[in-house]
Image (cartoon, rainbow, N blue to C red):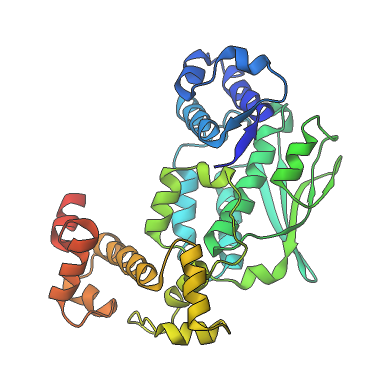
Length: 334
């Protein structure tokens, strides 16, 4: 987990204080003493920042953390992100997300602009003065950059970022959050990156998203580690097939697809802490739970779609993965 500069801890606390919320209990819950806030150049663990943001979300009942004229109900981002997974490319996901927020709020307006090989996400806060620390404006840009990177399984390198305010005292932290060219005193907040990423498909399932949301904003605070992991590339291949039934090609086929030897691919997956059998089981389990609970398909049909020769084989595998049979899982969720 990354560490976080004291500026952002203080800024989150200010979000609560401006709304009349006392923060002593919050500090106690995240393990920060008031004395630490007076020390220069202090950094805090990312888990503390994550928990602090969660507490402010809860106490204010506002995903915009009091930094806009009207609050945003809890669960709006989760609803948007779940619906976005139905789309087939980052381009469609981004455009859906932008249209969604432009529909539900007038406090933040967004627009996607394509110019040549560069795409720019333009953001405008109608009442930027309600966020004097510029915390939520920066956090909102971080959210969209990291969410896009997470959903395609690749770290998206930024070309440039524009801010609407002068260069702040925490400018060095901005270089860490947005490693690219920075421009200040601009008319709009902007994030620019290569348009080639727009064509990439999502590599996440609804179950991945459930884990992501459960720990949010932890995965938004940390930067995705590898720009192209072989785990993500294999997941993308398996999750974006044109066939109705899930097909898991031979390991040698994958190695040839990536222009490396089987031994090299096996070593790279081991370095990433996984293996091809583990990836296949993860995908089968994710899809199985989606189809059990969301699509509500019969167990025999789920077994067929996941490539099992018979329902009993699927049931045994599912119980091995979860400790429950598919029927027990579905009954429990109901």
